[in-house]
Length: 152
Image 1 (cartoon, one colour):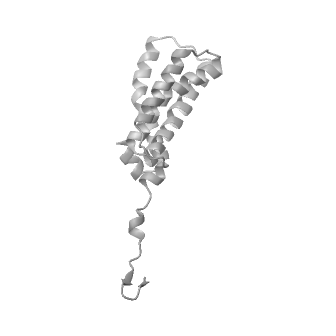
Image 2 (cartoon, helix red, strand yellow; image 1 turned 90 degrees about the vertical axis):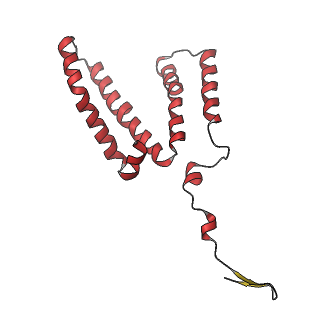
Image 3 (cartoon, rainbow, N blue to C red; image 1 turned 90 degrees about the horizontal axis):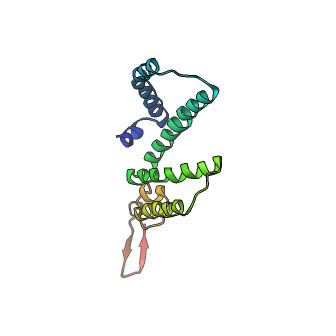
């Protein structure tokens, strides 16, 4: 459904409406949760909320919808399997978490699975799915076989 929507409307309005509807839906649940739990609002919690709202939700959705515009859905969906690699790799960089052999094995398995689902030809997505058919641009020629001359 998202693929059809982004071909009708621009990506930014789709992301804005998606985020707004999500906020409206979660507000009643949040209100109930706040009435039953004590909350301490700190700068750390504010920045965490801004990060999750802007970077994870909005930027992630923009990227996802852009991928749906330029790639077939099966290829765009396979990008989601890179998320654990990126998340754990970022954790190692930011927090200094050490990754062992099991992480390396997991990365190889994920990348191998993704590679097995990709087309064999090594073309960019735009070349593969959006390129005009060169057969449609051929000019008809008439050739006279007796004289060996051709004209357009």
